[in-house]
Image 1 (cartoon, helix red, strand yellow):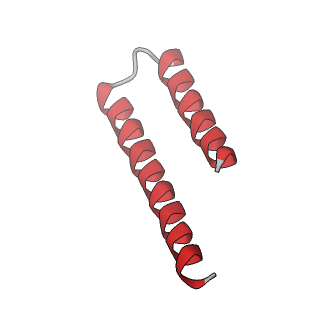
Image 2 (tube, helix red, strand yellow; image 1 turned 180 degrees about the horizontal axis):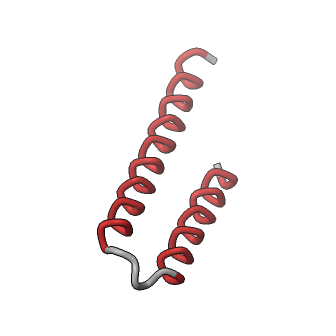
Length: 59
């Protein structure tokens, strides 16, 4: 679980570094990056919860 959190934090750091480096970029690009990152994190959390529930039910 902590490895997943570290991975998510590193992804967020990479994206924030990219946004900070490219300050003059379009706002739409930043919004798209944020939306993609949030959706990716939601999917990862959902998968982890599903795996946890399946583990509780069947093992």
